[in-house]
Image (tube, rainbow, N blue to C red; front, side, top):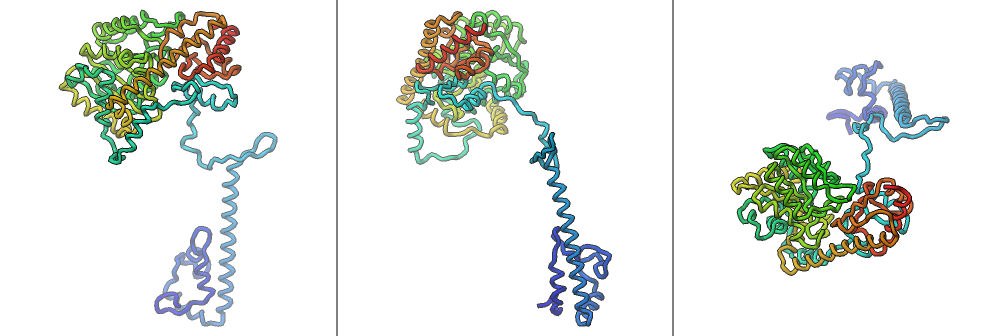
Length: 519
């Protein structure tokens, strides 16, 4: 076997020398040195030197030359290996730090600092953080009243029977596929959602003034609506939200590009509505400003307007200030047990012919929390602009999440389009609302039986999933420590998380906290 075409077999020691590589993946003879024939600094010797090398191949000094080359190669490899070891030790040393007392601690960081080393640890979400703390508590009597999700009397999550029936129908349909939806989602879902919140006989729907897009539950609907307003609204790019309000409102709208301000809503002294303060603040707000309104079951207070108060508010917003209402409807049917009653405010505003934004969620009223099903409806004054509004709405959605998921919206469409399933859903929905109302009465009666100081009638007067107890942070922390009751620090409790078994425990905790600490 020759070393090159036409060549003869090289000396075995020379061939071996050509195969030796150092730790850098190079053969030593390819690296420039000042020794002998390696001084050329090339991997291949000049032609004249090759001829001399062949002649030396047959000379009597062949053995000495090969032996010398082998020694040089070994020496070079040894020096390279030492250099590598030194570099490795130096690199390893950078992973250690000297602690006080002479101990050595290992640091997993690399020699180069992370580009994100400046990032600070974010605080836990005020609501979801309650569940994190609850999960860490090993107590067998712990109660989670923080998260807004319905629980059965046994404290278990509930999947509605009508939802299971709809799922069975969907799974039995072998023609269904997993293709992408259009940007605005399932058309039938959008049509049925608009009819649910506005009424099937809505003039706005009949006149083609409603644009509806399937979105990612209530949060996604609010965010899409906020970004559309920030880009296309001709009025002030400012939105007024009630104080207090759902914590996510204060994050969604600024990130969407709207300046966010508050108006008075809750009166802590009466634990009821501050109607006069609300009207005063909205009158002082700019003409044309956007106003966020909770359609029903205000979160976190559970305090709603009466129908007369809604009418008074509508006149201020529509007639006096020409402001734009943006309804957040997260609890339709879940508050009173009636889909129509809980939609009163939205329908009253829409039916006056003015423009309105509505965010809907099916998390609570169908129990589809994890499916993230919702809708944004935009009601415009002039049907001629509806197509253009929809086209621009798509441009907001496309770079955000491209298109919505299919499954949850298909469940909703199946229920709303099937008269039998729709009627069954209304029965189950009312049962959930009635159980929550029952928990309110049981808690009020338990506090009354214990002669707990204070007036607790607000528990009965408030509506929906939450009760704003009026308890302060010190009392909440005490209840968590001593009674393993978990709730948000503002005193909000989820009535849907209570049961007949846990009401006495909560009543004991509230009574003890109120007696021990003044509110």
